[in-house]
Length: 436
Image 1: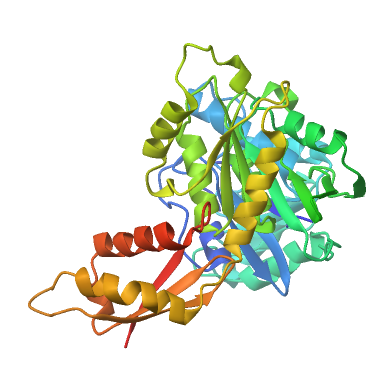
Image 2: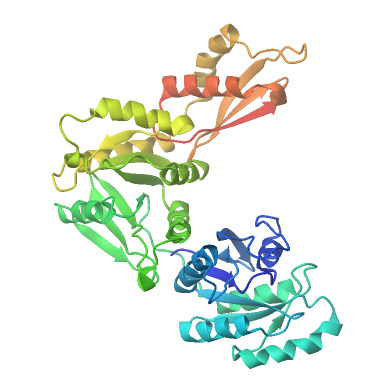
């Protein structure tokens, strides 16, 4: 089951981003005295007293402003209220209750979500007397904090975790391969999932998530137990047209945490977008195996680009992610759907692969001898030894006399040679350069 979500909402300039950074213990959100600085939400995973959750920072909510940016922020907060498990409503003790605060409070009372009314800028005991006025909002006991200096932030976190549902251990089959089906809306994710489950596959069990999480499906394929992590798109309540990307990314990130392999779908009738590449980069950073699936191949005219030409264009667009394998599918035509599963399983095996130290050094020793790292400031750099430290994802340690001076282009050279010799198709590789 995915981690619960806590969203910080409130009008502009009450200190939402400052509180976000304070609770996380590190500076992530942009903080400025000008209202409206946080236009897109920011989110991060955190834990308190053993409870993990996602903390989400939202833009300042202005209920009636005709400004296009304010309208976009209202949509953001609407999505936050729909998606979050707990709403942390932040107000400002120095300005008291404004008309906007009352409008937001009315909205929150109708949401039927747990709300934690939090009064910010209560920097010392002299401000405590002003906190009681916020009982008028009808949202329970106000919690005084100072995001700037951290006063009572621990008490606030205690109250947050008390409202969160417990996340039980998910009962997943031992040695199951967890596949996350990810992609933008209308690329065929649901059709792919339904086809894979309906065609000659015995569904072993279904694991329900929360009301907003999808249902994972477990089935057997070629003597493998596979968990399909469905990442269906957002429900378009209130006809939300913009700002869906952020919460789609929250869901995607939560799915990325749990999976072994990402099947990322794009449509053959559209070009790969910056958003697509951004999610693929996130999967890369998380160390997940990746397969890029170009779906709706049946909709491409015969005189259009060939698969090979598509491959070349996509590899160029992927840049450092060009190690990701690409497969072309059509769900209605049942083209290469099970080859996609075969490819995902092959990437899973590659992600768990270990190369013996003796084999690595037998390969790299003559290679490095003939292609030494460039000297830096008159210092001759020698790479003396390499070993695989771990798998899932693979981590390789290179020992050198001057590890900090090894150039990035030489590191890429080593990675390219390692992939050419040992494979690791679809798998992010980690490299550590250490002092010998």
